[in-house]
Image (cartoon, rainbow, N blue to C red; front, side, top):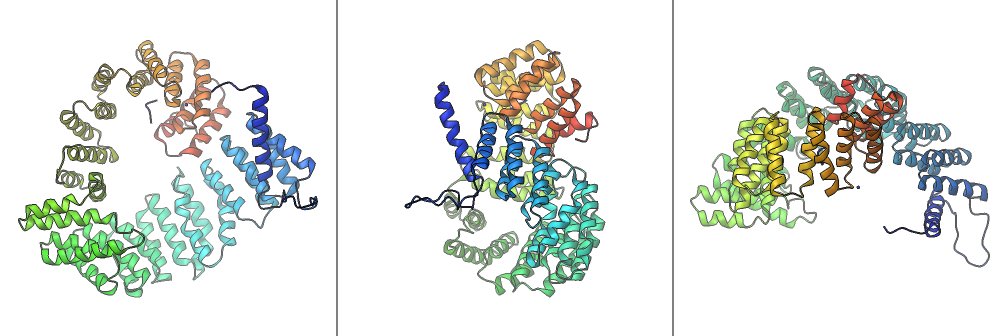
Length: 593
């Protein structure tokens, strides 16, 4: 896999250290309860729930966990929790299972916890998260409904608003939408939660590519509470995706809760940004002028207004807006405006340049301490342009940034290449890296990035040429050996050479789990499945990673160990359900772990 693991102690010393750790863990398992009182005269033996039998069981459980017998340790911990009906012990059992990357055991402990202590909400949250990580969204309705019903007032609204983010990584968006719709149905009729509930449904519909239905939900939420910001913010997202009809919801919210209120400000600022992105400058100007008049202490409206004024060439007004912004930013105690000062200095420089004051323009640029800040500020604008389908305009925007030092050239090229990579324009990204390598021929990391992009663009001969160039220039570049060897192994070609390359990478970086993964992969491709299995188990233990999980699961599957393969794939999904390699593997084997 391309990159993205002391001294011997005596048995007596090791046992003492392990015993100390285990004692600490055992004692803290009952956190919040009086286990050990300070010695003041005679000790009080009645203040502790930790009797001798429980102490021994906890100690034995922790010793097993520390010694690698996690399953036994988990069983002892869960048994102790059930005997004592103790939340902290249940939590420790869940933690042990999660540390062992055993989602099923963690789910078992969390469900037992929820059943044993039905008044607690924490176990339900664990159950929900674990079910989602195990890709079992269809089973989440009861626990999600329970979490909502246990919350009241603003906490209930917060719980509902958090649902889309909680379900964000669920692969089957249709199932997630169906479950959430079922659970929220009663909330649509509750006046206090209706707006949030409809908004959450709309966000789930948007994620499932049902934009027209999301617009209906946003309208229903706005109808339930015209002043609520939730449907209006959803409407703004829909506007960004081209659904201009959603704008009526935004306008209605601003009318019900004008910019003089905190709610109105949140919506108004986002509305102004989108109007600027849509190049509706007149509407944006009207809104920003209203904001700076009603809430002159706010920072961002002044900066947005100044940007628009510079674009409109109303330079004196722009300068005044920027001076106000910089004063507010410097006076801000929480540092909210510090990052925006970079943009303000850039705009002041542009104003000076437009006024033919080149010395003044350079003086403003000199105030920017870190050139990276310039590109960071501009990357956001370029990314917004690209998301609107204006990728060429985004690229032009990045290239138009001023060059004050040689490193700025590199920053601009890297920023452009990264933008193209983000939108999977592999060929164009490769061309930009080629340009960067010509400008910085001795930058081997740049050459490496070019090689990786050549692979994405299916220019495999070029990728190999570049990686060999790196190896010749820098013989200790383990990433280059590993990447080339893995590429050959993954395609099943020149396996003997692939193994030599990866073994060289192992020699240079023996503890790198990703390189170990590559070594296992070439062994597997060479027909040495048992050796591959041994290496992959070790690599996954050292560094739990979804791509290593994908490979480990595949080897297990081919060896007939399908249940264990599914378990490993589930654990990989627990780490990252949207990993491309893992998803590709599951699709290839037609498996839903």
